[in-house]
Length: 256
Length: 128
Image (cartoon, rainbow over all chains, first blue to last red; front, side, top):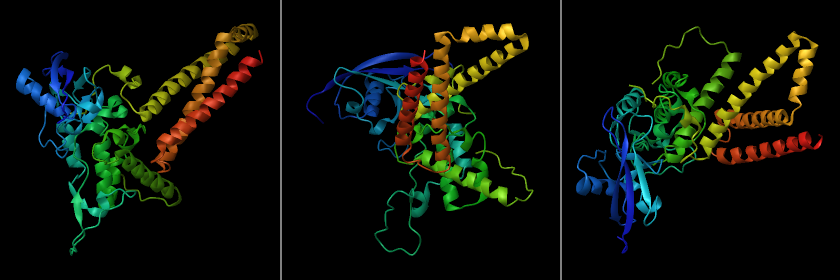
């Protein structure tokens, strides 16, 4: 806690399913080092019990509290108030983009979770696969008799889909998290199945290289790098196929 | 249920607020592509004047010598240069080249674009 409290105006998006959105302002005295989620919870607890929002772990592991803070996608449990405003300032809080709004700050992520599931996403992966090639992989401290594993970085918060300008233009685009998941699965098990799921006009080729997903990702997944790495693989396969005719077997995989 | 972008949200394609450099690249590519498509349409209309005889064509050429059209031509050059150079960045990235330094690549290519546009501005407007 810092000694001086700040007075901050929180402009919060309010909307019931199918209803017209509006903005309601709440003025709070806050510790500048508190998190945005703390302020949202205080608004709910002390000012308006009808406000709806999602939260769970409060330490950037569950991915539930993704919102837009002053227009930018943030995981609100790790975004300090001082990082987005100043004493006497205003903070605008909106739900994620490119998802249907269920109520206030809650969006329906059901389709996104289904697509992640279809991609084969597993939250535990071998250490070598879970780390990006340019990262320094951690070494297991104790000797173990099997390949070390770790939790993968993606927490399925959906910030990457919300910020993606391509997802804004095509509602069928599977989005960066799903493509990153397919890449992760392909690294672990390099079979054509994952390539076929990604190599689709609503998959790899819908990405317009804006790199916003990597910019907002709160856990360093680097979806853009993974998408480009998979594109490289597809392009290289296509070039090779010019010189080595492929079998007549037709691709029939569906996008994730 | 798909991602469901809001209906009639196309103005958001060009909204750079709260965005990082990559989206500026995305917006520039969209704007220049639309501009070049419009130019192609106008170019075809101009060529169509040939079918209407020499007088109609000469009249059209006299019209496009207007300084306003010259500015339009400069915009076409600018759009072509920006779209082409940005496209090179995206193509290289799609081959896995320069992905981690894409921001620097974008800035460098846009500086080159600025230099080329400045050169053409000087050439086109200094020679009368």
